[in-house]
Length: 298
Image (cartoon, rainbow, N blue to C red; front, side, top):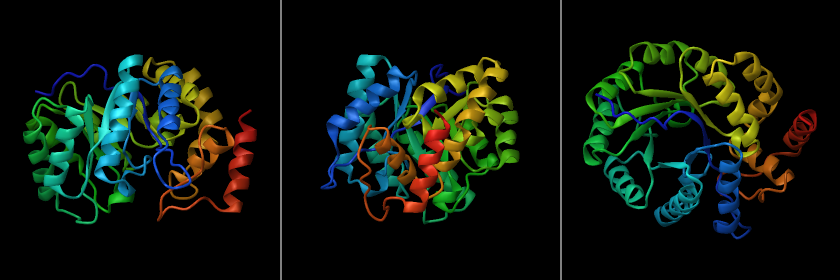
């Protein structure tokens, strides 16, 4: 039976990692951003995911960012779901254990990228991780647009049924039929969160339990309130917020995320626009679009 993790629902933020001009992590800025999230109503914090540019960070940096998140979260009574996944099963197990030791409350484990495993390979990968960190909650992360491989509904459900600590999935496949199959057949206590801002409201209406958000980096109050209204069944209020912030949700992906988000945050005075190669700042044309979106939301 799936572990009951009451807190794994609602609005989670896939945190950006602010960098200085020299490419190093801006610790002071990061802590302020995390505090802003919690004060804005977000109670689930996800460091070192796609939005955090974890793919360009070494292990020591990732662990440091997770530790900083834990420090702030404990003071403000939030939860930390650390991004620990990779396309190397043994390395993922090792880092997930380190994240647990650092105080993270759970792990977000992305589908193996580049390798393109079969569904049986996918099942074996997550099985080994679940068995190696028993009693530590795991959220699967399905994002085929980034990984070139999909965790099927059948594989997700098979993992959820077999391992009690595989307790949730962040679904960013964009395949509503697949997500509905998971929602319909999931075991008790297994949660499903939208991995895409623009899909959150319709998926919650179908029974999903929340959102892992990019735009909450920019507007945590509005995003968390939209999710809260939707989960409470107040769809009239949720829709009102959703349509107001939808242009930003979509604009954040005009170019490779988190480049648009970091530009918006720079315009808001929250952090610098610095990214790590191979990501680069957005083009002038995209800057104009993003500025228009920001102005339209005021």
